[in-house]
Length: 325
Image 1 (cartoon, one colour):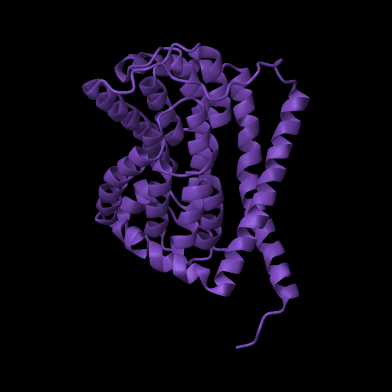
Image 2 (image 1 turned 180 degrees about the vertical axis):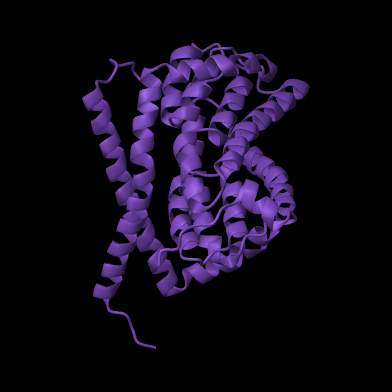
């Protein structure tokens, strides 16, 4: 077997980085512009009005509808800013854990649903999974806390931002540009680490260690590294790699579906978890209980989906992708 030179590895890394980044940029840039237009036209407020009647059944103040609506259409950071301006120190740890758990599952839907679609999953399924999953998880947490009368003490806001002026359109554009550059840098590091892991054999060790868990969800060995990336760093990064692999035919459509169903409920376990903890949520709600909820929902869902006919799967769950070559 001919050894590959360091120069060839660098060229391959550059090629893969540009491919994955460009794939994400083609999705994210138009979507960010559309989201900004929706914000300016009052789309967030309209969505919050639709969600407001549900808040009481979750034990939350009506103002939390605006928090989740902002999170659904934009991202967790924006939802947190709205939360800090409406919480006023009057919410309990249980209430913050409920809204925090909902935010972890339901956020950045325009971008992340589109990314999942690009990987081969029907957008209708992704949207329902994230919305209903967020509501169901919030209700489960509310039920547990209500029945056990736990976490009823006032929430402690670990960090609270200083309100600033409304950003100008130019400031918004520069902020988005910085975010896109950060995504590019993360992808460079991510792909370099994955390539290094493959060269020195760590990838095989990771595959071996995660194989029993992923086999439970019906996820093939080829998707192990991608699933790990999505679980730890976030759905967009995991799906960005998944798009490339799915497009090249290395991963079967229903394996893609299984990965995206799992990641739809649990992803970004590092950054997202830390963000919600800053709001004063309980650790179990944002990590251990969330993983348990994912297991209880994703496992039967994935096995149910695999038992459907191919025609049903193609119509409602997955769709064919254009191959790269």
